[in-house]
Image (cartoon, rainbow, N blue to C red; front, side):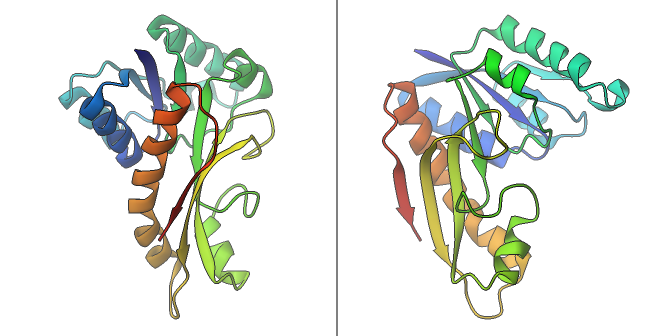
Length: 197
């Protein structure tokens, strides 16, 4: 059974969807939930499910990304995961760190990549006049939000939508897409998953 570590920064809703899906069919097991924010609500949710948790607060490192990532790597290595899932982990990781986990790291991004890499994706989709929006699960490489695409979910943009409306309507599709991709990835399958809303 594949061992999965999940990195979060906030409430951990995508982490919960991954963990619940793993529990349903035991195709993988969560061995660590790691946060960079001691106030991340997802830590409590993981602990309540009996999953080991670690918090490595990035703030004391004062921009020393190398030292922060050394601690991340140490905690991950101790958990010995086969797959690392970034699930709302709001830190940009360096290519050096990513290379240590090459071929094992996934991320979910709230846009139809390669459109709208980076932050504020919902607002940017609205400003661009998009009639569809969505989310993407991809392999993590040294290029920001640029690794091979493993799955996408697409929803319509409705008249009068705000960025908040889009984010709220997209979230349930994130919760379907990420577990579906992880299931395939855990068996070595990389054919893209498509979900239409």
